[in-house]
Image (cartoon, rainbow, N blue to C red):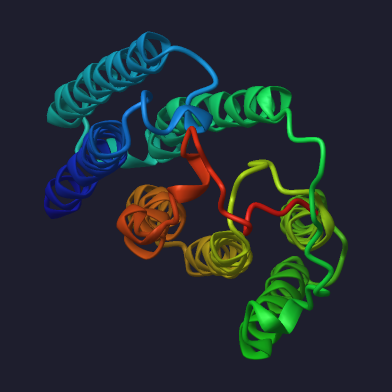
Amino acid sequence: MLVNILFYIIFISQIFLISYYYPKKIINRVNWVINKYPPNQYSKLYPESITKTQKGQRNYWLINQAIILVGVFLLYSYWSSAQENPAFYQEAESWPIFFGMVQCIPFILLELSGFKHFKLMRKADTRKSRTADLTPRRLFDFISPVLIVLAFTTYIFACLFSLYIDEFTFAKDSLVIISALTLSNAVSIAVTVFNLSGTRLDPHQSTIDRNKQISFTIKSVTHVSIYVSLFIIAHLVIRHFDIPFIEIMINSIYFQLVIFLGIGAMLNQVKVEELNFDVYKSDNSVTDSTVD
């Protein structure tokens, strides 16, 4: 009974945090920018009409509301099943993972919309002469070596611990875990390399804001890499010591941590009030609108 009560609390937190709290903060952030930097004065920030932007916001919010209803339905279904089977957590242990994937859909759509927005900004950029920032970007200018070492160490430990649990027999479970961890870290490395060497998506972004963004992104994917490894280690410990009642809660906490370290950290660290919006002015004459 106590296990189910704890799960209710944790799962409600997952619904609220990922599908209401952070989406609401994102919408408020966009509205603040629109009101503070309107299209008639900052036209370079709006390659599409403001109506489309507001429609996208509305759709984003509606999708999250629909997902909240799905979460409430899952919570009710779990409660109903737990009345007959108090150990229902063993059958529903994967629910937070699959629901978390659904909760990530609006964020993925938002990211894709951002890529489209920047593409339109580049297309609308008619400047004939541009300057380039030739300062080389080095990894440790944006992140502490300690974090990189910690990410690598937790990855190696998770792989070795998985092999240890299966007595170094290279069982299917170990191979799946090691492959998933390797793929996850490969994506993190690819994101890091792209940010260090790729062209800026926003053609008007100032160099200072660009560097802040690079620093945040690299730190974020590194933290996520560490927590993915810790998540795998936690699952292996649960499996090794046969304590399945914790797994359903670990699965929910994991997704909340990923969003907290990703979206949450972005909203807290990349403060929109501190960004340089002068580069988007209609009569922009700011010289720091370089491209790489």
